[in-house]
Amino acid sequence: MRTPQEGLDLEFKSRVLIIDDDEGMAKTLSAILGKAGYAVGAATTGKAAIESFQQSQDSKTLQVVLLDIRLPDMNGISVLKELRKIDAGVSVIMITGNADMETAVASLHEGATAYVTKPYNIEEVKSFIHRGFERQTLLRQNKILMNRLQEWNVELEKTVHEKTAELKTKNMILLEVVEKLKVLNELKSRFVANASHELQTPMTSILGFSSMLLDYWDKVDHAQIMRFLQIIRDEAQRLSRSSRELLDLSRLQDGKMQFDRKKINLKEIADQVTENLRVIKNTVAVEVHFDPGSEEIVNDPDKVQQIFINLVGNALKYSPDGSQLKILGKMRRGVAIISIVDQGPGIPVDKREKIFEPFYRIHDDIGKKVRGTGLGLSIAKAIVEAMGGVIRVEGEVGKGSNFTFALPKELPSENGNGIQI
Image (cartoon, rainbow, N blue to C red; front, top):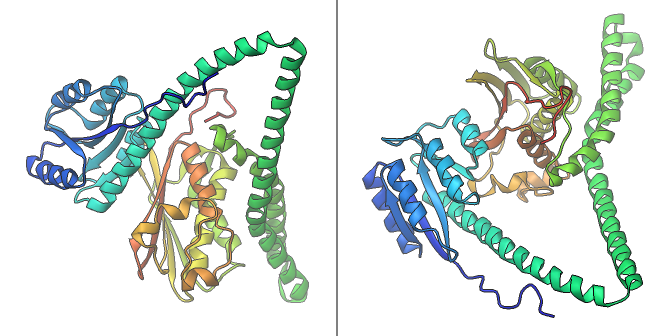
């Protein structure tokens, strides 16, 4: 019996299609990518690009598309939709001269794999192209292997049927037991790792405010006592919820997460999170400002609060004493955009994607002094993307970081109480 790998040819040709009406920029980029070893095609209109893409489709060629959002005959997102009708797995990098988060959300929702702005960093573009080909190679290889696997399964089924029914039953039971054990082990490891981080912040608030009550009971008035007790109760309740929600996060790998849809006020959540985190670090001045009309959205209050806790908590940990941290909100065409701007050490360009990976920490002199598991940013990113939003980080090394995330004004619902994404 042959294996699924026998007889496979998994080598592909790589072609980059540049769709941009700026011929000078397209020629320059074509020359650079040509020297890098890529076959390059170019088109100045959406119609010509679709025809070129269609004509170059074959089983041996992988294509990555650099697509300008503004073309003389078609909108870039319309071109993206047509390309995905031809090849649903195509890797498309959107290019625009206007860095707005709404366009990023729209293009990513339609299947774009990355988003860059003019003037773009050529090394960043090369990196996106490289990852695009890696992604398509995996998709194409997986498709070929799955076809082979289906053929192999037919042969295996025939062989198994030639054996006794008892042997077949025992093998199937054994496979099911092994898979269940693997899933249980992964869930256990994920829960232990996430719990150590996600339960730390509410515990710190509970311990901090309860210690203040014990140490200064006779020095605080009744209003302050009630306020501290309210915070302790709220954090204890959130601690209880977090223990359940950590299990929900494990479902992200399967593309599923439950959401409760409620009308929430983003500024109130930001103010509450800021107040609760003061017990961790109160030497940083925090300013919260939301444009009028940008505060209210329909979303899951606990998960939105978790995003703020992870991002603001991270910014506070890296902010020097006496510095300022800003939490800014605005609404653009049905998208809430929240920025958390600090005056910390900043993040190098080559680390800006890696910091969202689970357990990744920057190992510099500053990073070594800040304790943490490296899960907070990855969890925040997972929740934002599960809600249909995007998150990114900008800034300059030595001058601070700007973490920005965007969420739709209203979380879509299928069942009335929540959705699965």
